[in-house]
Length: 271
Picture: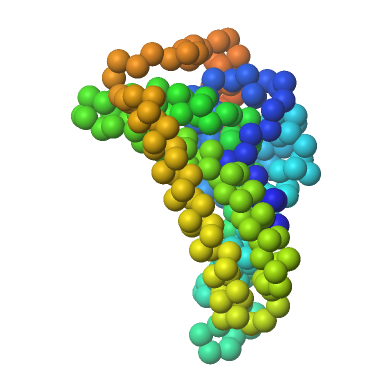
């Protein structure tokens, strides 16, 4: 399951989405998330589903590779669904026991929240899978450059986010190695109750934290040794420039968002 986490990884491919400006993909992801939590009704769900499937098809990232990333959020999805199912009041109560109840509204909310979480992971994973950390840093810094006028360290924030994303696959690989090494020494991470499993994680977490701090220290020393100094005055090896394809992508995103809003207003969810 450790290797099934796809957030933060980059999947190289020659696709139209890979070639888009990172600012376009950042804006598209933001608009997609807003649309995902705005839609109400079958029409909005269909529009978002078709848009997501079309984007995955254009990205040339194998769908099976993206679905693997959902395994890491199974517990979160189940917990969220059960919370909405058992604690949401409604007009028609199908089952009730103490503070727990299952109603028509609870079932609807549980299904919608499950769909939203799954689509959220797939959509955000698509951005990181088609954008390198360097492109993501440049796009984020360029998009938020207007904040420099109020003395917000945009470059430092973008650099920290880029380093964090780049460290995700590294730490995943490190965790997998440590887990296999501990299992070879007799460690058991799968059996026992919740408290025992938490105790069994200590031999994994301690060397993982030590390794993470060591890597962070090595990175800081390497940046200092190269006289790295972020902020104003730095030039880009590959400056970001919009192309015709980027303009078309912006237009498609606005049309997609407008369709979701129209579907929310004129095609409400059946009561």
